Image (cartoon, rainbow, N blue to C red; front, side, top):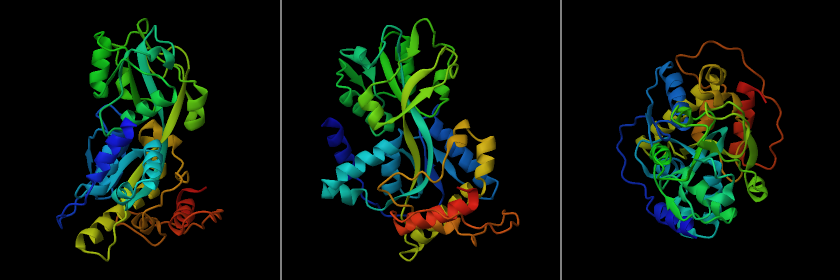
Length: 349
């Protein structure tokens, strides 16, 4: 299928380049109006309060972020959709080249569910009405691009034209009458849809209630009043956002050692300041369950180092030791079992 070929080409180019020994801390997120970039800024703010500098970078989205963690210098973190992870793992199982290309990418933390938005002209009542229409599916290397492509294929809908443009460009085109609908995968509430230019008499969020899709994705609902133009609740599907990292080996060289320390530091910041992130960060932090690990992927060892009870940063207040909560982890890898034990000790389970 076309999506598989596009991803194969991208992954096969993912070769680790030479690295500079100077290590900064960087995270790849998404577009300027999306939820990823706000989550990244929340983490960076928490890190700054602990004396750590972390730069938040815009990106096309999930696939670029995954590849960036794999191949981009001094890029320790990227936010990726769970369906992208599942797709890559499935694709890699049948292709040794792709399997080698994704080797080394690890989980840092599971995050929140993000909803599949489909904004369209009012006369488009469901996915079937996209047949033969002009539909924007996000730019290449984005999670929206992959999800929209899979959704259309699973629903057996063939738009007349699939435009690979950004969400901002999509909204502009829709409002100008040059587009019939566009997909955008983002955690509710997404800033893009707060625009007062979206007229409730002309546009709406299309409900996604297809039974096949609701078996593949998590069924959910976008509550009434989430956006200014939205009067009632909307059926939707969701994917999980996951913070990914790389499996640095501190014994390998100075770059790996310093990068591992950076991953450990940020992991410690997220876990130790999780309650603050939920209270003061983007509303999606309140929905984060740090134990919901996606199947088939392991936690990075440098993450677990930062979660260890003895790991401390200068900004940490004195705290009483917390006993870990027993968790049944017999079917998981040792790295994931260690993660669960330690995260339960910090934030509870």
